[in-house]
Image (cartoon, rainbow, N blue to C red):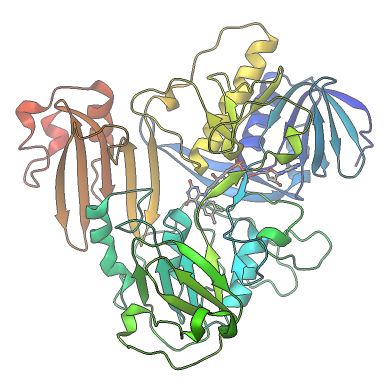
Length: 511
Ligand code: FAD
């Protein structure tokens, strides 16, 4: 790799995740003869493949993971610098890397992602899931585990509790229903049967992610590739020093999430509780109280067994387990960039960006999980730290950086008009549109619901007779029609009673 000490680049992008790579691709296509640098901590990058525009705003794509050299071979004006950024000096437009290189930029885009919010960084039995290293560490521990506790109610927790087999899973959620970040109690109720032992078999294809595998020693066939540069396994969360790219859809594909027991899949949910305390041994438990059993087992006392870790919940229960998975959200990776600079930060810790993806520091942009969208949002869009938004923001940031260099006007991309996301939860296709959970609407909205147990769940959010959001689970085929109804804001009051009538072909109806 070339020595880039004190080298100046027209554009520098930090981060080899989806946001950074998309940004670099955009810049390289617009400025094929300008020098562009991608500085990234991990040796592999994530790239979008097989992009498919499903409808006006819904998109699907595969994710491929490659050595960074593949990107460098594809984009001839790109230099990849594999090292972590240690500091940023916006006054001199320079970055310093941990291996001592100084890189000067004219325009910089920070796409350093986010890391899991860990319940504690001091307990080795508390794991976070972020990158391939941490997913493999989870697998290693799980194959010896009899019971785990999963804390959190977002997408990662949802996928994890569904996929784990051969191990008791206690799932602690702070809300009244599961999956609160994605849907309401009605939708959660539709999914709950899937958590039992008779969960449905995987029907359709996996989600879109596909990892390009380079099998290493000890890597099972079809497994995701490990990032460890030195050949040694790195621990998750606190232990990892070089942050890898975030995993995404299908992060568990190819890794066996099997515990040590011959028991069917079974999850007990502890609702409306948070973590009060974590204990490392039974002796630490207050008053010598024994731990409570998971509720799904229906026992009153647990045989006194020594577990590596105990978790005390705010509902008064104490549960012993082999390890705890902390899936309580993410924290933007901003640290190396903050010292000595004057970045405006949002309440969630992200770098505040305007509609041109500019931070508060001159010539510094940001995209993906590290940033917080602080422009005045369309009333049907909200930021969620998702794969699709990382791609959209990376693309838009590259576009804006180019437009500013060329002194061209640029508008916010259409993809930020309407929130839309396709995913799979518990083997159901899930499409989320607009204010799918009535976000920010207050009491002034109405819900229409159609549910066929085990097959589909359809929810429409109406505000003043107009459709402003929808949740579609199962093969409903309604996404395009509903997207149009949301975008055109037609008054649906006269059709209200027919909208979810299963005997009416709604697509024809509004054609
Ligand atoms: P990242 O992918 O995290 O990339 C950050 C990059 O920055 C990495 O290359 C890293 O090495 C680099 N970096 C960090 N710090 C530095 C530094 N100091 N110097 C240099 N480089 C640095 N989203 C979905 O839409 N659907 C899902 O089903 C889904 N499932 C998920 C499951 C898991 C387990 C996880 C962890 C996330 C999931 N997500 C999902 C979220 C999605 O993966 C992220 O929103 C997306 O990957 C963010 O992309 P990014 O490019 O902003 O950041």
